Image 1 (cartoon, helix red, strand yellow):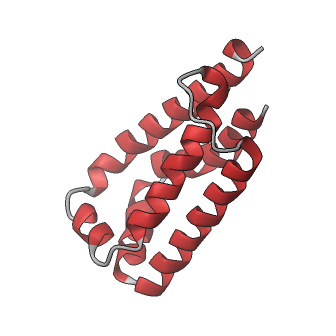
Image 2 (cartoon, rainbow, N blue to C red):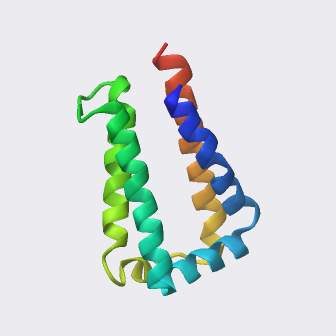
Image 3 (cartoon, one colour):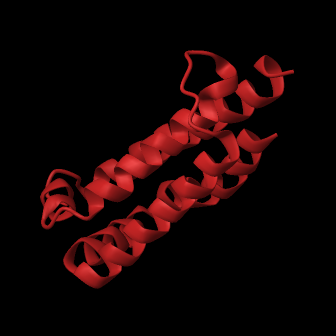
Length: 123
């Protein structure tokens, strides 16, 4: 059930990227230019990872049941990488506005995969 809850929170963001790529690209570009916003978003990701890992524990086995713990670890790594100065600005130079719907669609497929794993494989 927790993977479906995570998917419910991620789906609107990815849908926004698919439906309005220009605004999403502008938002990410402004996030990469502002170190204060980048630090705040990084702390949000670190807090989210802390909540996920405190619920699941630090058990990282290669089973479907520990997928949420692995996602918490990946979220922690994303938050830590955002604290590196200039990292997001360098990555945003590689992403164009035309690529945003494709990235959003890949994100929606990831959300669909989370729901599938939670409802079919973890029964």
